[in-house]
Length: 379
Image 1: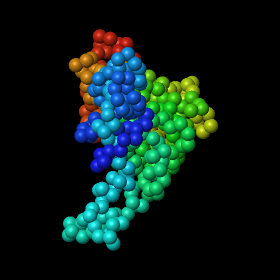
Image 2 (image 1 turned 120 degrees about the horizontal axis):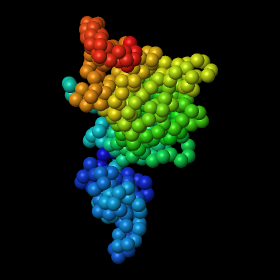
Image 3 (image 1 turned 120 degrees about the vertical axis):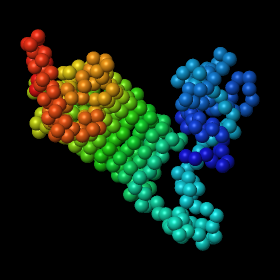
Image 4 (image 1 turned 45 degrees about the vertical axis):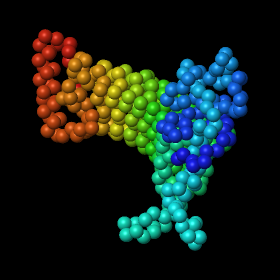
């Protein structure tokens, strides 16, 4: 939370802290205790930005393991800030000097300078981005105390893997855990607590694999409509196919990954539900694939096989960059029979007609010298 006025000096391993006087410098406590050759207690911190002095050792003695050679440092307790509680932050924001009769009231001032009471029971969205939270039990406590809460943003809080009881998140419909270190294994463990989740944002967490719990595809998440996996490290489309049985999924964001191709399975492959004949990605209507490494037209053509897909982003891929041997927009429109929005721009009926005419002329001009060319144009 915000910096406290009087920093407390009780520290523990795993705690998130800020450097006193520098709220942007955040790290994780890795060691608390004495250092050989120095007096009193020291706190060993592994800094998020990697700007420390060592790797957790000093004068040949190992005290902790930092994530890099120079991301760790030892700090006196009085030079670290532990933040404040959510309740203290709310009181600081909404309460000021008042009379005895008003001391329990939280309020904001209206444009006419009248007090408007603030009731926490009405909170529906809570943005906790960039604080010092790390424990899921604290998140669960917050959700439990705010029964109207539906959206919570925990971005830029380094969340520790939980070890015992699941946090109570059953009321949450939108969960944002960007840049928190949460991987898919943690998502699977949280699944039981996310029974009403509709949007899940997991950007920038170095995810490279989708690890389903007990089957070959991800199960559950019966209300999930939007899944945001942008800015991760997924490089195999087979990992994405593990999401193909999420039945309510309408929007899948995969910008800024490492994908170099994609496909839609044929009838002989194992991705179709054996119980209900549910087609893979049956309700997916938006797929964002910008800034990957896709470089083949077969991947583009396979997008026609997705049953409901009409909104596609392919910008910043080799296949869409004519300077790198890619194809221009009119070719993409002509090859994608159902696309209505391409790279964020609407495909109007006029643009589609013009693109298809231009595309047919291009193909015909090539057939004179290479009759086999027609096999490369499924439409």
